[in-house]
Image 1 (cartoon, rainbow, N blue to C red):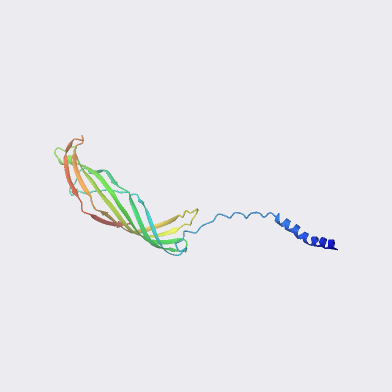
Image 2 (spheres, rainbow, N blue to C red):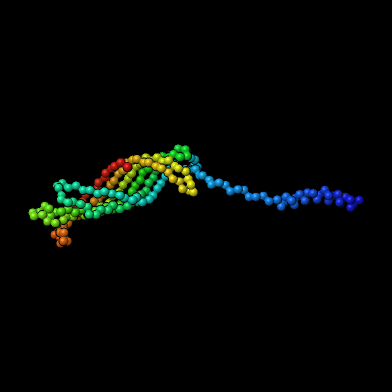
Amino acid sequence: MGKSKALLLFACVSPGLVQSAWAADLYIPPPAPLPPRFEMPAQNLLGATDGYYLRGDIGVGLTQHTITSTFSLPVPDARFDSSYIGDSTFVRLGFGRQFGTWIRSDVTFEYRGSSSISATETYNQGAFFTPPSAIRSYDSYNGHISHGVFLLNGYADLGTWQRISPFVGLGVGYAMHRVPDLKDSGGVSAINSTSYGVGGFGYASATTSSSLA
């Protein structure tokens, strides 16, 4: 009798053991890789795509220039033999708003630090003499220039791919330019490099001008 009960109990338990062993050996394939993810444009500090933001930039401004001069009397064959305006560092601060996902606008103020100015201008002084000669006079200019720029800007963001966020922008505003210390020293030389003496010296008072930016 005891043996019969033991055999019956084993018969009731063994199907479950077989089923558990089969389930443990079942192979489940890994999930398929996700497709490349398209990221939305960078959000503001509050994590929203519609709201206000502050911005700050620092960098180096590359300068392109054209230099001219005027004289109170006609001067023969005046020309700039060399001219230079150095690059300058800039700091820009701004306040703006994000309009939905793609459009934003801001107002910025940019200050460009002082950069050096130098130029050498020559003219044919010998043309004033009788008979004329090839003697040339020169003026050497040295000073500094700084800039301040206010701009109203608009941007269209083009999305973000691999952490790169291209955009198209347009700005219009007002620029101020300040030259605090322009100096002019002159001299005279001949075409054969023989010195004929030293010319004058002059300086300009601090000057500020403005233009469309």
